[in-house]
Length: 106
Image (cartoon, rainbow, N blue to C red; front, side, top):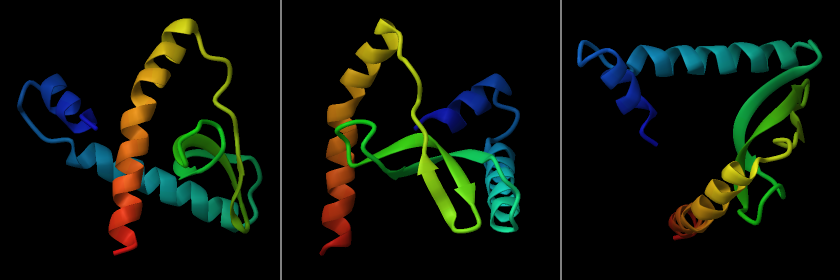
C-alpha cells in the first residue's frame, strides 16, 4: 500500500515511484507474454483468487503458461513472526475484498 512512499523516501524527496511502478508493470507483462508464447516455468506474483488463506483473493506466486495463470503456488512455510503478521492483516484484507465485491455487484 505504501511502497511508492518508501521509494520517494529512499530518494530523499528527489523523485517519484512512477518509474518503479512502470518497470514492474513492464516486467510482469513481458513475462506473461513469454509464457503465452510457450516459454515454460514463468512464475510471477499476482493478486488472484486462491485458497491459500481464508481470504478470497491473495497475492501469491503463480505459474503462467499459454493459457494464462495455470497454478497458484504456495508461499512456503511462515515463521511465527510472519504468521502473526498474516493473521493480523487478514481481517482488513477480507474487509477490503468485500468492499470491492460489493462495488462490482452494484
